[in-house]
Image 1 (cartoon, helix red, strand yellow):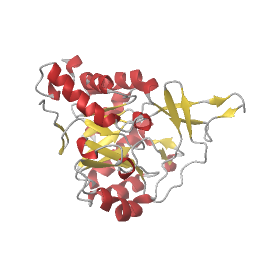
Image 2 (tube, rainbow, N blue to C red):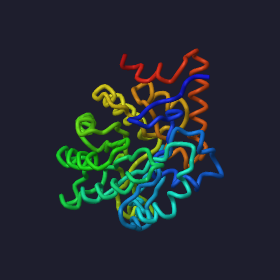
Image 3 (cartoon, rainbow, N blue to C red):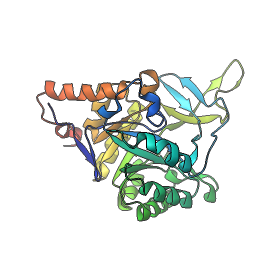
Length: 303
């Protein structure tokens, strides 16, 4: 058997395949479809300090080779997570990672402090694609100074593995990867969704209540792959690839471009077992090629 183990910060993963935040619930929702213990990790849906209802409907729309979403981080807040979700998932035989969101730096800090105390959560994924209300709604992850400030503030209070999720809606994503590395992040994950929109020509209205939303799925894969390749060449910390991974070959492309690990997202809506199938597919590929482990192909395009 080929060695699929990878390391992100202090977190050891049995294989490089995770599920993406917002596409896998908290885990129990998919237990009837997939053996969660086969995965390297799961990233639970975006969590905030307070309960959030999210955006009005409609907030999802199909697009050619993808989908738009404007869910708006609907969740019941950290109190509910600690009291009702955490007891159900703390025993999973895989890494459970919380995607952290906030409207102010203080939100991020308080939330990270709370999660730092949960012993069965080895890492957080810091979602800096959120509007900073104190800066008039500017997204943390599209302003270098704002990104630097929030990452540094969270790093001061969070002692475990810190993954920063980068927005693709910037001119140079490597700048934000370098900022993340410089402020002590253990890894960066990319890409978050691309900003897009769709119009219903019959009603002559936008398909989303918010007009614009996040585009994911196969349509974004070439852009995501390019950005992962660029970032992997720009930083020394592990890169986690996200964006349109629908099968094993997609995952292998990201790994060869420099990703230490990958996340399966939109594909889980179509086939909930996709992540599990990708794990098996990577192992079969390595054996077929006579390779001893996934590290032999990680970043092979950059050697």
